[in-house]
Length: 101
Image (cartoon, rainbow, N blue to C red; front, side):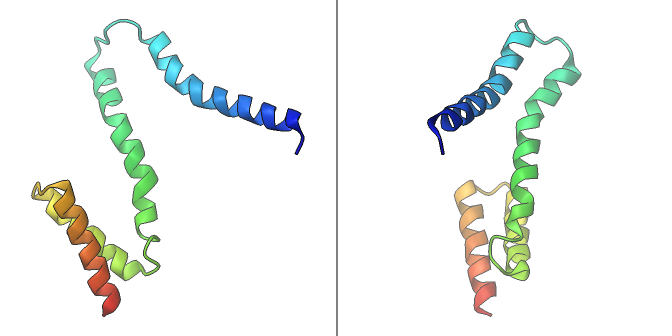
């Protein structure tokens, strides 16, 4: 690889990373009065994070059955408002037990 190619790649990556962070600040300088837009902006990070991570859960263990069991336990405990550490440990333990069987 040439130095010119590496510097061009770094510059493009910097722009792609920087623009999505700066554009909302420049577009929405004042207070957002629309409840719809405010709600949309509040929930967007959670939706994107879920869309990126949830499909990968089922392929992370190498066994779909253990992944489904761990995810089910995590969702049930999260529904009943258990803490993050409890949910994570119970899901890991469930995956471990199902893979032993």
